[in-house]
Length: 505
Image (cartoon, rainbow, N blue to C red; front, side):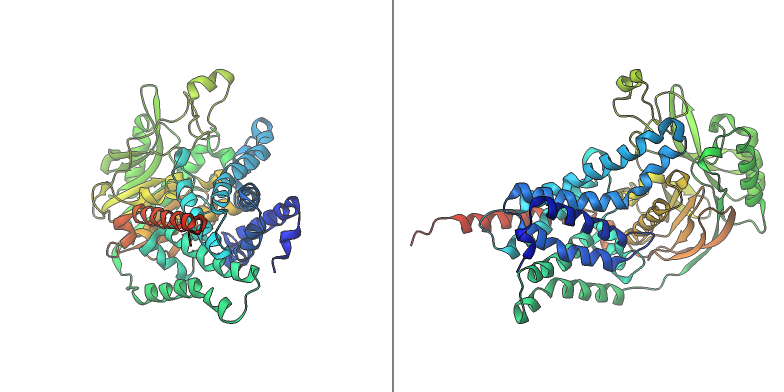
């Protein structure tokens, strides 16, 4: 029996919010995926207790608000860098972000609460609508797929499925493997009836075994990449008294020991405008002793400024640049900025003008002696679609980021987890360099082979793994899952129509 059906909506929403908070324990840094599984098992009881679509929608919204509120607690950190000016915004940002993202789940719950369907069909429909809404969350209003359910599996063999079905496919399978058995428990089923509900988790387990059996060894390329981590706290990073110290630190680490094949600095590591930094770039090139250097820098073209990654060659020449194309709303630019600037609203990361301008899109950089690299600057590594090469498959992925904005709790660890997902999805190694950490070499199966911990200055020389053969998800992307979800939803609607058709016998 579903005992929560007798509870008023307010109590069911409160329980749903608590379950959402518990579900977020599966994300980094705790990575207690069992907590997420347990919470999702309990969700069908609350969903089936809702008598109509309105209460179902409120139930889904409450669960998701608890989930995203806990998962995104780090989002207050950027506002605390200059607490006197921006600190008052922090709680509003968290509440609005969590509540806004929860609307996607509210819509999914409301759409699935269809009359005329039995409990298992309703819960199956909920799995499909949630899968569709989670896919939409990565695209609508520029997208924000952070804290997707597939992230709970990073570091486990389950994550191998990312190479086959991607994060959205793994999220749908996770929902099916938890919510369908949860529906059986909510209905008080026993014996063979309950055993039939175990088919989705069994299918997920068999898929993992198949993916593990298909795993191939990862080989070394024989190339060495130096990851340079300056550990510049955000409140000191742009302080004129401090940034020469951080710059000298990076140059010293670049010049240390035997020269590597490639040196990588973090996002916005250069404290000068790129086009005005000629003498400093010469020092960097001399320290690298012939190795190309990838470093983050800001550059300007007339009134426009860009968050860029530059490749520095011999003599300090800028051999190539990549401009970040997916900017952080309200952080690097302000939507409708021309209007809002009149009221004093500007992006936190903007140091001149109205914020950063977006680059033309993903592109690869040809690195001498290494091959084509696909750069991802900070936030861009959150989006699976940007890890696919626009002009052929790259040799490696390179993420440079400034996670000092994210504080020292959940944010940097969740960002790292998503970088590991991108490597698995594409079967490519990823070089990840973060200002304050965590910098890491990630192999094509998502394993960290070398790293610098959070909050520590230093460098590490890491062997660059070879790329694996192209993955299924790397070739297809999200389109097959979108089409499959739409077909299944269309079938569910047709079944519902038959269920509601008057009996003509």
